[in-house]
Length: 204
Image (cartoon, rainbow, N blue to C red; front, side):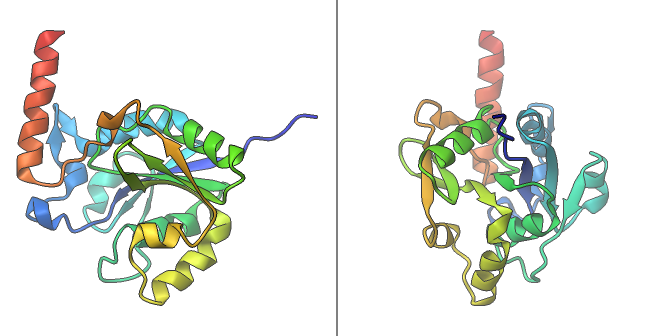
């Protein structure tokens, strides 16, 4: 019997205020010659059925990528969970898989490894672990949990990991590529990553 594989929408989370980056929209910050969001997009697109971008500003810039844009349904910048919820409301696939816009090296097998782990452990959702700590912004979530997530947000819940642990949670092991979860949160991070990229290019 032929089994139909679950469908997945990739969601790039670019809806934050970026306070530690002095309010700069991190997805549009230049890194290695192009905006950060383009690095994430290039790695995520081959893994999923479609890609959405969760953003609450600079809509015209993000619209130039020709993708579905989703703004937070909850006002006031309520954090990554609000972006995840909005994407779940908009998606037509079985699952969404999320990644932040400020991580240019996301795993090329993020969706595949998460789905395999989720199925193997008969879990509801799956998140990543880099060998040192949980990476809850990288998560695969079934759209069937949309109402549950909405209820959690409306009750004041904001912490991603707390919501994940309310359900049967699988943890995908990415300890073989911890550098994939590098993220650029501050101007200092940005400078270090640019220098690292230049050094790697010089060695090639």
